[in-house]
Image (cartoon, rainbow over all chains, first blue to last red; front, side):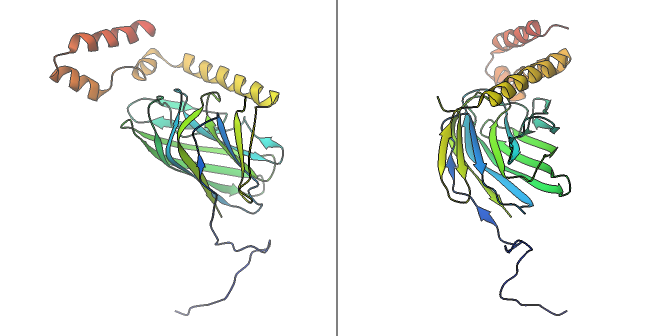
Length: 172
Length: 82
């Protein structure tokens, strides 16, 4: 078995295809949504990282994808699940769980991968653990009208506000 | 009042803004759809999401607090009748 050692490797866009970028951590302590914008073209995998994220109400967390035209709010296919409770089919975003309460925090990761670059289709999968002794699961897919440039962390209802924790994203 | 914090992942610049009218309309539509989906669930599923947890039941048994537990269950059953 031979080994190839090179000083640098580039993709067609001039970037290192194996480089992982992490955004600055954002406190999730106010407002109803966090948008991570200006994600560069060519990204094929995004991780949404949650550390003690909490909101003011009972609307489950979800992630929405966007392109140059803005955040897309329809056409998602998927379901969130919270252990000990129930399932929740969501078409307006990628559900992180099915239910939550104001007092709980959530931690874990959602991975979103480019499934088909010809039609900008992304698929997601996540497992999160809450401070309320349950687990959130989810799986979704969504075809964007253009190349992904942004992701939004928010709630299904869209009006509950963040009141604890932090979030960041990794992409490559 | 601001609703969204936008974070530019390239520069780290942060800006806050209110939802646009389109975003407000989208949220209203999403809330209506969520309610519609929940309303379409059968009574068993609706009750399951609000019944006391197994842990709460165990504590009620051990703490001899079954009356309060049954009151909670009855309230959920009345909220979501067969």
